[in-house]
Image (cartoon, rainbow over all chains, first blue to last red; front, side):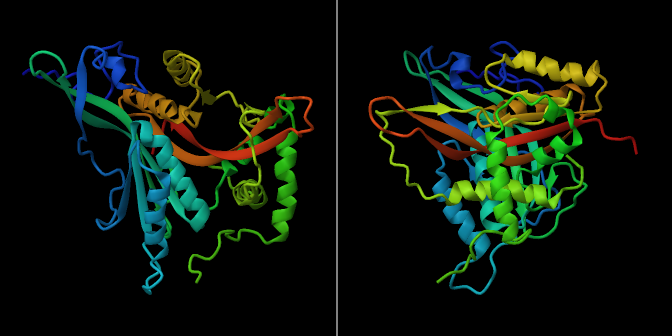
Length: 228
Length: 151
């Protein structure tokens, strides 16, 4: 048995076996281990500092994995933040969604769904590299194990019913859905002049804009959490 | 990213998403008879310091482009955008930029939902079927990579 540490403790690069800039996504076959008769037997994320210092220890952390079902994650998280129907409490004040590697997109999707359904949530997003330890075992011949340390991008999204520090990098105020784009379009008028794309999607949202403003401004459009 | 928000604007985009979600799925689609064609995402702002990351361009080229903007281009901040699968790559580029700046560069990430439109085109022109469109949502990330102002 021997151990191979590639890139241990060096957050700047990923996966030194192949070319140093072949970074992400780094599927296992980038290492050519799978083709050389190796099988991944275990994958553990190494502890990294919490990206939200000063957060209470009791906060619900949803760890989103590649194979997690959004339905299951959201069923659990929504029940916790809205509060169970039979308890008097209004549910948790804060939730953290974390995910790394190929689960990053799913993590964002979960946060986006929760923001839409719950409404009025303050958001703080943090990015960092996470070290993942993988143990590979030879599938042919002698039992050989390899330990591979790999750095993968990870995301942590804090959603809070209570206000967060707006000066903190990565802060998003409630109901800022898509507002990023609108602001920029206003900030740079030349982008409209050079627009070559058909106008249909713009028209489309414009129509609904009229409709929606009649219903009242800034009102969360989600149904009341406690029905029945 | 830090400009004051305009309430009317944010409501417009919000309602669009609500619409997409609340539309009952009445489209009975027969996969054999329709071709699904994905439209490009709607036109988005493009300033000199906006970088839209995709999965077709070589990773190194996209990273180099960002580095050039920050070092040679004289920009104090750039904005890296990624949609769907390209979110990972956008994050990776941002973290690489930060690491190669010895931690001088800071990141501020925001997430959003982008509405996408698919066209369903009938394959058989003889049959009287109407072309249809279907909207769906995808997640996106917008990372501001910037040199913090000296305090």
